[in-house]
Image (cartoon, rainbow, N blue to C red; front, side, top):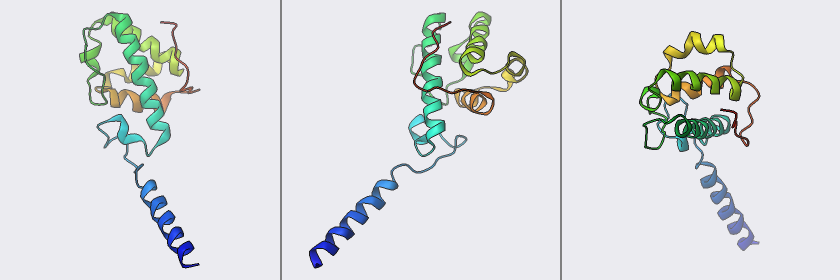
Length: 135
């Protein structure tokens, strides 16, 4: 009986330590995507948006060669008017955000984190396991 109690306490301790791994970090405080694991929706959305942006950057001939991070600026990745127009189309097609809303608020978006928050607030029909290849 004593051994069972010890085993239960060990298991309880392991369970407590395991739950501490995914601590919540708000989107405004996050600097890396991995910090968002405590918020599954924002974590999955961030990964999906960054993946789509990376695919579009390659396709649009972006000069950005590094990995896209939350704190990367949109202008450092997409610098031409054609790239920005294509990015707006990507947001419309992939996340079902109205072109009027995008045109109205796009100038307020500075970083990729701002863009992800915008998509989270205004997007619809999220499917994290597919990729829009229409652009």
